[in-house]
Image (cartoon, rainbow over all chains, first blue to last red; front, top):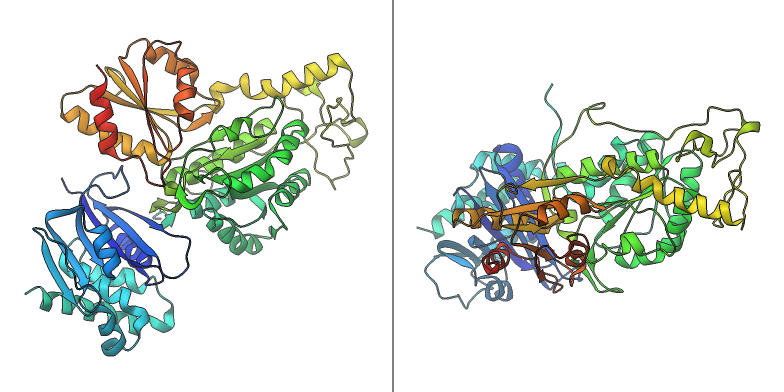
Length: 181
Length: 377
């Protein structure tokens, strides 16, 4: 089965829905595969648990939500605790190592680095933490090529922020590779 | 030339479908989870000489919608449960005065304010019986982003063809999920416009049945003058309490849909022919159901999916036919048995209907449906 299920989770306002949309767009528009993105969030504009789910497949996608998660991004401890239950054996957990300190038990690959601080200190703007995380998810999951994912990022952000997002995406990609060695 | 593709939400697709159908007027009041429909219309309509207006509340929006349509333009509004409740009085007005318009209602948890960001399918009876009195009801329930686009075009066609309000009701999952959409070229999908009067203004009557069950509708401002009321009316539009006229007009209004069910109804059958168990599901729930049906088939169980795309009028005759050959129906739904009740109402007790009813803000998942399929003996 080619069905691959990803979940981007964290707090409302961290841009995780956007990260999910870009991942799905990369697969669906630039990679020519099938993809569905869905989301669930609370009534708050900021804070509260937020998740964005992406299904990628080579055949038609019926159920648009996660059945067994292949790859989970957790940007807060709350999200990590709440959404790691259905992580597949052999799956991938990517987490922000400053914020997630209690890791779930399980037979899956755990990759952590300081995602938000990377955005803040190394890229220069905390607001692109979601794109750092996206770059990392692209690197770890291998579902879309680096080139196509970057195209999807650049077509989704305002002109004035293209360089910033490019830097964020590539730094996330590299950091994830380094952290998973 | 390659067709235009995009990665869109169901709500955005509804707006683009409306524009494709020739919609030039939107009146609404924003409400989660339907707001993106209004957002897109507010951006796009001014570019093509259309008008967008945010009214003071939902019933005001419905009033504006009816007025816009009477002025001769295709009109759209979007809302969700609480807004649909508030619009009901004027939806009935649209039915009796026979004013074409399209209402997108994104189903969220209810009743009342309920769960604004959670999915639901519990407005489905409200689409038929929300407004009081006997009236025609047409309600479409798409299951994918592409289908939201296409069914919105069809909603306008049906509204214009039968001169009546039409509802299109994606659940929150379909409305908010994003998928790739291929935009049809102009002319690729049928677009129907209301029939204009063929007589001069002095001879025009807005409910002239000598033209059939759907009389031509003139546009206000085009020189035709006529009376519009929510009271039972005569052919010239003025009120009447004359028994035989009221009876005949009420029957005609309902007959517009009843006698044309074959044209309005639409459904999909998947693996039905040899099925022992048939899952009846619509909207996002049908996607869970298809997943479960495939799993069941792999496990050697003859399961099938019956997916209404038009919910009202409901495909009663076809389900009755299917019910004679199956061991049971499953009704997975994000409501407490509304769809199961409708199924039971048309299968004359031929087979049991097992329900899976979720109103906790989570979708019915494929595993739940598969388990229920296995229960049918």
